[in-house]
Image (cartoon, rainbow, N blue to C red; front, side, top):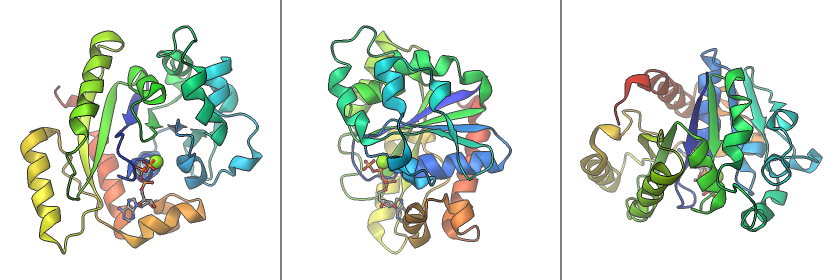
Length: 257
Ligand SMILES: Nc1ncnc2c1ncn2[C@@H]1O[C@H](COP(=O)(O)OP(=O)(O)OP(=O)(O)O)[C@@H](O)[C@H]1O
Ligand SMILES: [Mg+2]
């Protein structure tokens, strides 16, 4: 049975999508069958794996709001072993349309239940908010990965996220565990980055992944070519670190709560 992992942080631009796409591609390279679920109306993970959103007449919106089976919207990507459930801008309406519906917090969970056996990993790329879409992701997941940018104010807003995770654990998904905190966009030339790493480690202790993602120009370029880093530039530092992270995730089954 597959492991479902949400990649969440309500702060924008911290590396959620970059990590969703490239961790997924890394896991796929190690022969895991992987599904990305894009639940961000921006649809960055969707375009990041080369899917043209304008060509899509169905997406995760139809699954969440119209009960379309998730299987019907799964599409293969150019990366072997990697499928995606895409998001288009249509999803922007879901946050409000779901409010009056029955079982609005568990719609994604129900949809993914039927798919869980087809994949080794299902990675959910969350939007930068703590609204119903992120709640659906957390309710569906076994674990949550929190990317934290190595910048000043890195920890700001994390208490809100942790509180939301606690509420989901209490009311909707007792199983949910924090998989780990991923430090992203480290600029090794500055002292600030090192200070932030220290601070985050003090707070989260052994929950912080050993792999730290540096700033890497190639990682920033890859999405505009619709490719994960391991195909866009397999020799880059970015490809190396996301493969390392994939290994770490594959070995983290025994991580304790
Ligand atoms: N390690 C990195 N090195 C260089 N650029 C990066 C790196 N990680 C992410 N980026 C770039 O930074 C920007 C923000 O990253 P990303 O889209 O992954 O963040 P996000 O948390 O998904 O954002 P949002 O909250 O809008 O969904 C993107 O342009 C991305 O290409
Ligand atoms: Mg994103």
